[in-house]
Image (cartoon, rainbow over all chains, first blue to last red; front, side, top):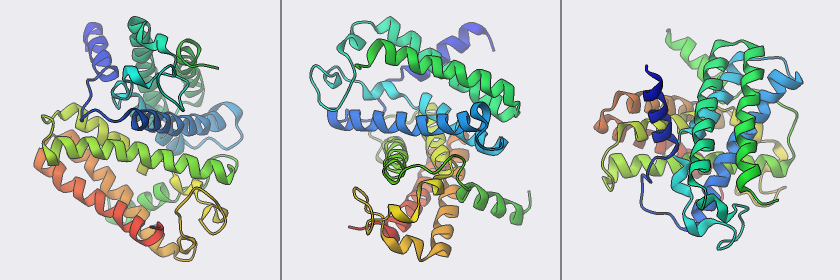
Length: 153
Length: 153
């Protein structure tokens, strides 16, 4: 697969147009928070297995957790970000309005999240604990990049 | 793969022992609700594409949605159900205490959810809209079975 094609596919996955009728702002916020909480739960499991070592490394559980994170990354989250859903217009969200003023930055981070989450899924399937630990950190960097840029304290 | 082996693997996936230190009851409830909300969002997308026809059938988006539902089913949700997390002891949940009195029923439904969600993932990857619609209904039946038995009105 050519590099250019991969990039295009990743952008399509990260920025897919809404698949269903526009949801209410409240539903968008609740759904995107749910997706990230589900991803965070699974990040926590991988951390326990591959980084902290607080549980014995279980290849199948780590692979299931990585599948979950990749599924979130590839689920077309952009459908859950209408302009009215930032914290200058909506409640119960920390999304800053600059999210909508810096589309190239958003795209860069979204594409990185998809790419690194897909790579984590591959590494987890491969079963190499050290490689999983390294790739876990890369995914975490993409989470942090979005939080640092677009999430209010 | 032999039938007996598949069943054992499905049971293991559905009923995996907790992978991390016990979470608080509040976190269990919030995390499991997040997982199901993420799954429900993705069920809604498949419904729009394959049942209602309110959007043109997009094989990649349907496959991504089915991956998300399967990822939830295979994520070891049982770790999020401690006895103290039912609605006789905890708030913000509709989980009925009989969930803990009928483990065979719970197991049967959990295993069905994993099996049917995995099958939906396969059908979605295959791209046959009618097959996806049929299998979507099967997954929905397993959701309903759990709600009917273990979720308060």
